[in-house]
Image (cartoon, rainbow, N blue to C red):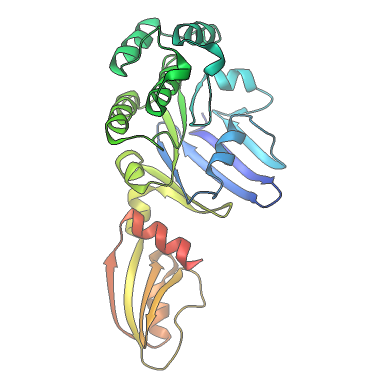
Amino acid sequence: MDAQAITIRGLEKSFSRFKLGPIDLNVPKGAIYGLIGSNGAGKTTTIDLIMGMGREDAGTIEVFGLDHTQDEVTVKLQVGFVSPELSFAPWSKISRLVTFIRAFYPDWDDAYCTELMQRLKLNWGDRIGTLSFGAKTKLNLLLALSHRPALLLLDEPLVGLDAVSKQEVFTELLDAVQDENRTVLISSHNLDDIERFADHIGILHDGQLLLEGPTSELVERFKMVHCVSTNGTTPGGFPGVYVQKQDGARWRILIDTKENALDRLSAQGMTDITTAPVTLEELFVALVKGR
């Protein structure tokens, strides 16, 4: 059985001023995968392509081993999608919208939907056009969760929310993903959200996937190094070295221990080498800056 919920190979999509890929990406079944990157990195484009919103120029996308276009209906029945770009205003009232959406999902859970409605402080008679931004996000989440999908695709689900709404939405998300059989792909540029939520991460920058894997393993794998160049040599020039700052002969560098970078720095004549662990935020900033 395929251990991946999402498998992407050689994915490419070009626009007038931006190109995504080629990227390979793997989201394990049961994982909470955080796709992180600055605004414009390609996170939304990637999720839109998984959902079949637009067509890739090259590459393949599989969801639970199914081709996302050839098996589009089967795939979408297993997916809950949350995006701030979705608009449901044409249905006027929440009751009409829910009645319309639930007809597409044989596994729609009416009792769970009603429970979510109460917990998210929504009402059947609420007019969609008058809802606050936070309430619209909660409505989006209600629709995504009520058919108990095997895969949740969350595109910046907390963007624009005030502190109270963010806490309410986050509580429901955390509750919804307690089932180890459910997989989550969440995109965000807010690393605080991801650190609270994701056990796997992928770092996307300028359309390229720089790194992916289990969060704890990646954070442990990288170190911040402080060293001194006694012979005037600029450190690096080999894989696994991301120079952050120079202050005279002193350097601050992010290293990938998998690339044996410490020994190579020593061989270049670097001295007074000290290492320190990094946080997820430090890792992300350093990788992007080091590019």
